[in-house]
Image (tube, rainbow, N blue to C red):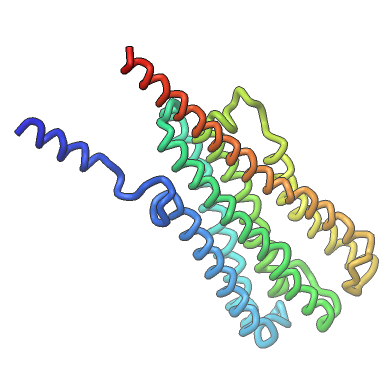
Length: 270
């Protein structure tokens, strides 16, 4: 009976899904990528539905209803969500054991990859999908302000979420993967480039609007105040280093596991 109860207890403590099962460690990737895609596609459809009908006159009641209210919701949602997530990562990271099993470390690496995937989705929408819509708006409405329908979605939701995800992914690695991003290893260049990319993009759009207002009104890519966007692309390539760094750690885990197995075999033989 005692043996049976111990077996039942161990079975209850065993996780339902393995580290690399699609609904185990990969759950973060699936949920986050799908969630961000739905959010941004919904915002894109919203923009196409109400941009021209309610987004031309900033002094109208329709603009206040459809766009100023959306601006407030985005600022509150992104702001509260970002602070809450970052605070949870730091606070929970202080209580999580840094000495972890190989299986748990693999699971955390898979979660980390899921966050990288979600960050990639955000960077795509913030740097490609919405800017293309914004460029089309500029070519038809000529110039505008920082509070037009495309800008309200880009500047106050998509771009801030880029910073949210890049910094949050670093905090996860810093608190959950000590052998890759622990404090003793210093601040990684990969995250320096990636975080700098999202911050640079946020600052660049402000300079871009200033330049368009006082200098060149047409949206041509060769305009000098568009050049920093290329720097953003170079910096964002730091995201590929995150895959490589954690993939190398997986090889290290495999080697450590083989050494432990060999050690146990030697001890058993003795």
